[in-house]
Image (cartoon, rainbow, N blue to C red; front, side, top):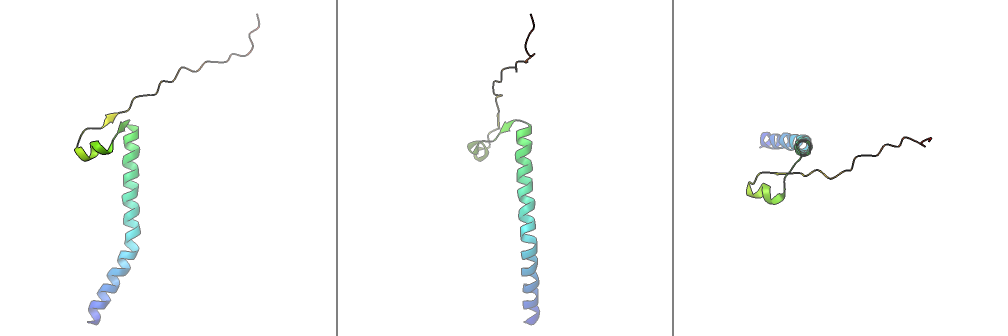
Length: 75
């Protein structure tokens, strides 16, 4: 019986040490996946992920070209 309790103690300590590590690894993978989706400009809506539909490409926002300021013009 003492051996069984010793095994349970070792497993509990291992779970306490490895639990946060595994959680952090999974979190990092999720963040990397989100960054890759932004880099490829694809947006996964929740209904698409649940239904297995392809991602929607993002539209670029209209940005007018910046005007250059040449300073005061001497005529």
